Image (tube, rainbow, N blue to C red; front, side, top):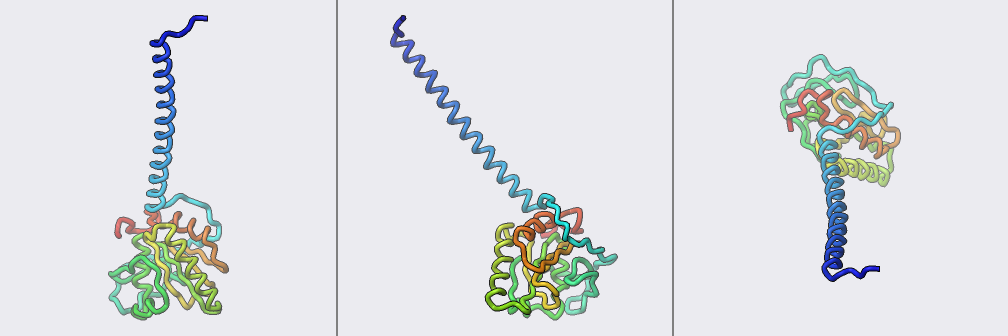
Length: 207
């Protein structure tokens, strides 16, 4: 057996080091691809969402006319309760969760603002705590806010709606989903399917 020279041993060591380097950098590159892919997926979710079949969603006929009406006037009637399209005020509602006290600061017809937001691609969580115990009501609000947070608080609104016959309903333009018992997983899927969807809302480019 021929003994390796010092030069050959050094060359062999360099080849081993290069091989280890390729493995390390290959792992780094793979990790970078995963991170970038996650960011791209996140961006897609924020901008429109991927379709997840939800059989319970009602397709509500959109209003034939959905022009602006003067603030303070009754913008209804609507094709559904809660509304999912129709006449609205020139000013939309801002994204966020509104409790009962904050909602009371709106004029008597808050739907005028909320429908305008849906025209811009918003999804709205309408909730009604009537009949719920105080603790259950707070848990419901936290659950809704949790979903809103997971979807980036982007183009989503939570708003109390006393005329609801269920604890929670969700709407986007022409879409309605009612919950006898709130399901956060289903609610998040509804947001990702319908928020800022250009095939539904007329003005998704608006903020």
